[in-house]
Amino acid sequence: MHCLCLAIIIALPASTPSEFKNSASFALGAFVNIDGWPNGFAFIYSFLAPLWTIGSFDCSVHISEEATNAATACPWAIVLAIGIAGILGTAINMALAFCMGTDLQALVDSNQPMAAIFFNAFGQKGTLAIWAFVVIVQYMMGSSMLLGASRQTFAFSRDKALPFSSWLYRMNSYTKTPVNTVIFDAGCALLLGLLAFAGKTAIASVFTVSTTAVYVAYAIPIAARFLGKNDFKPGPFRLGIFSLPVAVISVLFMLFLGIVFLFPATPQTDVPDMNYSVVVLGGAMFFSLGWYYFPKYGGVHWFTGPITTIAKEAPDLLEHEEILRQSAQSELVDTEKA
Image 1 (cartoon, helix red, strand yellow):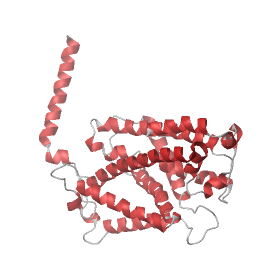
Image 2 (cartoon, helix red, strand yellow):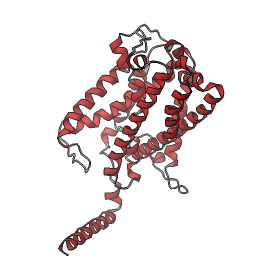
Image 3 (cartoon, helix red, strand yellow):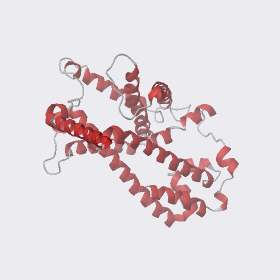
Image 4 (tube, one colour):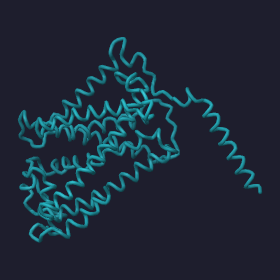
């Protein structure tokens, strides 16, 4: 994927004809508003695409149970993933801004604006070659997201927090992996993908709600860390005195943009072009709360939090790790004395 990014960053400016190359003043300073919203709101609404692109950094957390030294490795994986994505994404956007021409309305009206930019630079055969790699990269990205989602579903089902948890929380005897959760998540993804046949508005609501829903999931634990009493204990990776300011800024940022992304693309809209993200998000929240507070059988009556499998099922492993830790400390003391 990184090689594809570098290829676009280098090859696109080198191959774009002069009539499609933009000046620095246009690429870096021009503001074109084609949606009808006031310029300020249009600028904020344009955050949807980049924020959706870098919205999967939590995949590192979902597979943390399979990582070594997860308490340190996973936070650094998040930081490095976002850092690399931010640098490459900025470079790609810069290349596109300088090589997309000035007729932005024509790009928006085309079936695939990115392919139109490539076509102007590389021609038909070159665009098809690059687009083949784009499809492969998209498939690889989808596979990585399926990996994280299946591990997350497996963890939820282990805690009996999902319907059909007994089936989902079942390791395949041959592969030793949670195949059932992979099948379940892939099936849900395929069903959501069918919304593309219902029109651009339907599938756009999925992309929009994916960002908004993730913000809801992120904001709740961050706020719970500082609101009310809890037994939170900082790990080896911490922000120290910056924890509270960063948490406040993060929650306010996600709350604000989460509301903005529920607005339609244009101020004058109708039923077919409405942003139905609020319906999708509201429906998911409604059924989730209904499942939790359902009389007698709801999670509120029996759910006690995540199950600590190591402490319950492998106390000897914890004892063994403690012995190794004490042995290592003893060897360190002996070395210092020597």
